[in-house]
Amino acid sequence: MQVFAIKFLQVLLYGSAFFIGMRTVGLDLAGLAVLSGAIGVGLGFDLQKMVSNLVSGIIILLDKSIKPGDVISLG
Image (cartoon, rainbow, N blue to C red):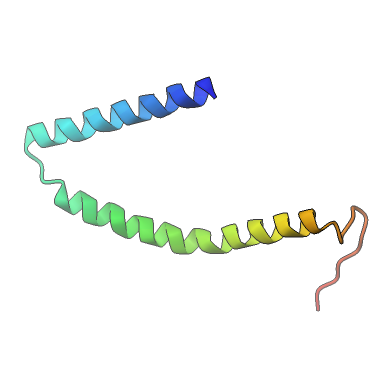
């Protein structure tokens, strides 16, 4: 947990320094905000299927109706 906190603070500080530096130089960050929002929406749609499969797998594991060695056939 301590390593996670240190890494999180490092990313936060480097990100803050980057954005403060960009504003100091005079670059407009509105375009960057729009771009990052569009990328976030795209990643959200892409990761939706993966998260759905992960949650389904966890539900199957917690249900304990399928045990190791069971054969599952699709079709």
